[in-house]
Amino acid sequence: MTECAAWLQDFLADGWKPCEAVREAAYEAGFSKRDLQIARAELGVIPDSITTWRLPEEQA
Image 1 (cartoon, rainbow, N blue to C red):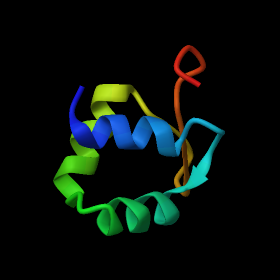
Image 2: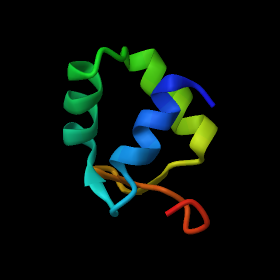
Image 3: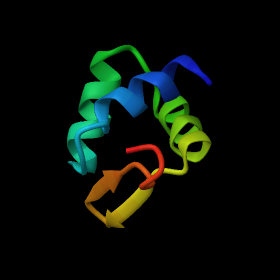
C-alpha cells in the first residue's frame, strides 16, 4: 500500500468526506494530486456523488 493510500484509508475510516476536504487535507499532508488519484484507485474509493468520497464497505 502506498503511503498516500494508507493516509487516505485513515482519513476516510469514519465515513464519507467532501472531496474538497479530502484534497485539501492530502495537499497539507504533502501528497500531490497524482498521489491521491493513485491512492483512490488502490483503495477502490467510491464517489458517493460528485462531491463526496468513501471507502468500500469491506474497508470501512
